[in-house]
Image (tube, rainbow over all chains, first blue to last red):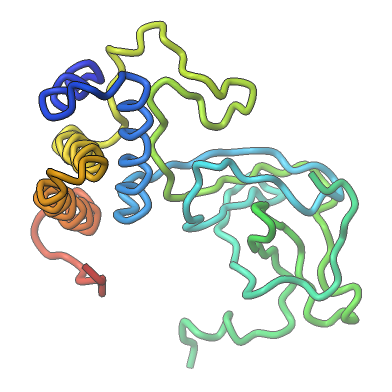
Length: 95
Length: 145
């Protein structure tokens, strides 16, 4: 359904609302729907920087399911999740 | 006898690990035999990392991951469609209608009706997710509806 049609359907009930206000509410509804259903999955790749420990996550990421890391042979292996965090932090190159 | 648990309980294997901290992902090499200070070492070379994750749909008119564009982009906006599967688009409209009625005290009871419709959409969305686009035998997962 195109955005124009969604706005038209809302305006049948609320003709006083402006387009921008409706779009903001649609975005709010979309966020709630995605957060509660976890319906959308995605994968993305990035390359590590030598001796950098932390890499910022996009705001749109809700939950990381798994992480694969390329090994010396170029194979991609799933790596384990650490419970908690290391006691000693490496704060070099923190983003 | 070998079993699937042997690796999990092997305390002498050096391996890579990840964790989440302060909206960032941390990556390190874990050496269980090293001293506590040296136990986690940052990766010393450029390696490709693949993240698999659940995400929010892109916002209409806003590139949410680009902090330089925080206002609505109007070009071609009205022809945009949600990233959600099409059968769930109506539920977004229902939610907005609910929010609109919540601003009108004289028609507040209508908000409850449209909230019920949206909640039905949430249930259907979770069911769609759990089906995993596969028919036939399914894995039953615990879920709070």
